Image (cartoon, rainbow, N blue to C red; front, side, top):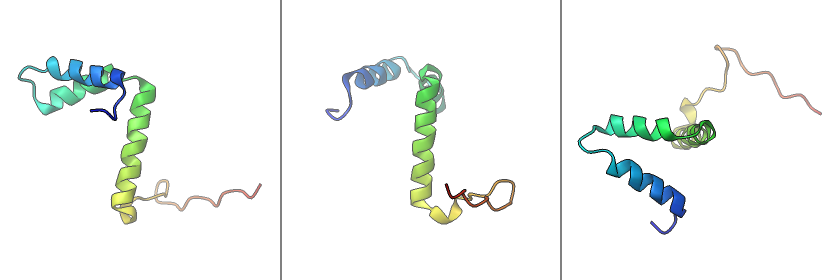
Length: 74
C-alpha cells in the first residue's frame, strides 16, 4: 500500500489484526469508534460526493421539500 501514509497503514493493520471472527459490521463499527469526529465528517463528505457523482439525479438539494433560496449576490 505505497499510496497510504504509514500511520494509516498502521491503523488499518491494527484494526484488521484485532478482528478475529467479528462480522464486517463489527469491524466497521470499531473503525468508526476509533476515528476522530473530523475524520468522520471528512469520510461522510467524501461518500456524499461519491453518491452525487454516481447518481446526480437522486441528490435533492431542497430542505423539507422547499427549493433552496438563491444565494445572495455579494
